[in-house]
Image 1 (spheres, rainbow, N blue to C red):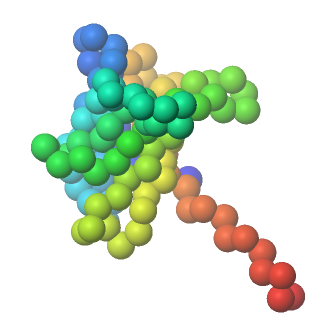
Image 2: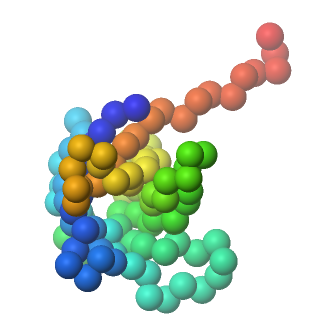
Length: 111
């Protein structure tokens, strides 16, 4: 797992602002509540770099009961879709960390 971003919650408590930094992507980012939710699987938030939407987020709960946002980031400039989790930072009272981990490859049935 790697921390690829740091965020703070807005004064209203609904929006997150921060930055994502990887070898290919270095951007200030906003995670904004989705006001046009259309279905039960619709994202709760949209992710923006400037005015460009680069992803979406869904609320989840970890195995140990911690709520977090599950993010899917994608853009034509990315080499692959990025999946990450926005978790409250235990070391900071008002900070959040964006954590990325490489998806596990499925075992091939050929072995």
